[in-house]
Amino acid sequence: MNSAADNTPEYVRRNKANWDDRAAAHAASPNYQVKAFVDDPSHLSHVVRFDMPLLGSIDGLRGVHLQCHIGTDTLSLARLGAQMTGLDFSPQSLIEARKLAEATGTSIDFVEGDVYAAANLLGSDAFDFVFTGVGALCWLPSIRQWAQVVSDLLRPGGRLFIREGHPMLWAIDEARTDGIVVDYAYFETEQPLVDEDAGTYVSTDVQFRENITMTWNHGIGEIVTALSEAGLQVTGLVEHQSVPWEAIPGQMVEGDDGEWRLRERPERLACTYTLQAVKQKQG
Ligand SMILES: C[S@@+](CC[C@H](N)C(=O)[O-])C[C@H]1O[C@@H](n2cnc3c(N)ncnc32)[C@H](O)[C@@H]1O
Image 1 (cartoon, rainbow, N blue to C red):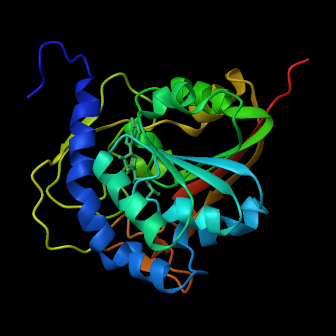
Image 2 (image 1 turned 90 degrees about the vertical axis):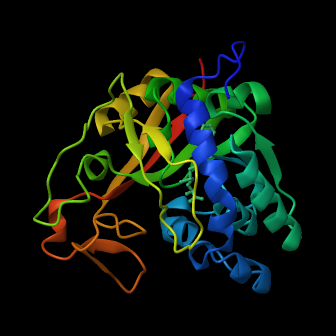
């Protein structure tokens, strides 16, 4: 129950409860491959392996992974030589992330907190790069506020690297099986999309109790503009026809690379994008 004195926004309470409820099931599911990380010190997450050609060398850099969840991508970045901090507002996710870091003997600083408070919690100008993975921005109501946090966290000359679900994909009604139907907002809206879903995106038999989510979309133009206004210059924007899971069930096919594309004419839909931006030096 939310006490009268607790002015935490409803979306934070709802979404945190939803993620807390799912963290242990995610860590136990085959999809996140926790055992492979422990058994094989060179194992990397699918997401980070996909990112590597555009990411380049991060050896020796100070990185922060925003919305790190159970830390599999954070650990993968640490295995590529970066000195990593992971931030997430879900304490249950961080319990799993810390267990994984300990089981693999990896030094990673996991910090509990809201993305919007990240610079206050972790320091300004403190990182060489900010990393964010697929399925993160939709939990945030304001892309401008997020962009300012990214800018605050980075040292001048530091880099943002994000691969994210494309706003065009988020606008598709994934329950329709009769074609690609745009039914949700593409642009950022004041009101969230409120959804109730008893499942999750991994294979699990666990029954969940916290099933409400509150999410927002952010158009590509809104994201690029927000970064520019926060003092970052976009240095790369690549749209991909693929996504790491079957985002539109029944209409996608998995490739040899473990990514999913539309079965018919995949060139119709951008499913994810990789955006890079550099914080401008003042002067
Ligand atoms: C899909 S997961 C992160 C994606 C990551 N690629 C993964 O699969 O490990 C989304 C994460 O965002 C976190 N999150 C959502 N809203 C947040 C907020 N306002 N502040 C901090 N973390 C948040 C959730 O707790 C969850 O761990």
